[in-house]
Every structure is written in structure tokens, then in C-alpha cells.
Length: 98
Image: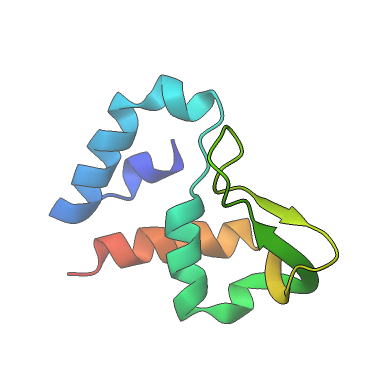
């Protein structure tokens, strides 16, 4: 709904149309993980971080690709929260920039 009045470029209109067509899916619990990850790559201070020992499950099965914490896993910096308001603004601004 916020994006409804903020899609002024063809790219933003495309994203708005796509999101509108998927509204039921989005309302059921869609998260903007991929756009958020891209935004964090260009604006590191958009998130807060902590160090955690994480491994990726490599075995075939229903948990394949999941991350799990535990001993023996390498310690990495993990984004644990993000500034939602700033992300929304960056997302909108980026799509509306000619």
C-alpha cells in the first residue's frame, strides 16, 4: 500500500504491478530478503550484526541449504536486524531513479 503512490518510473511500476498480483502471497508472509540483502551490500549501516558460528546443511533432504549454529562451524558476522523504514525508502528511491 505504501508503494502505491510511489511508483513513478517504469521499473517501479513493474515492481508495483508484480507485487499487486502477488498480494495474497505477500500478505501470507512474504519477506523482502533478497532486496534487503542487496540494499545492505550497498548500505552496510542499514543492519545491525552479531558474530555467530554457522554451518550450511549440505546433506540432501528437507533441511538442505539451511543454516544452523553450532560448535565446529565457522564464526561469521550475521545481520540480525534492519532498519525497515530506511530500507523501504532506499527500495522506493532506487526503483524510481531514472
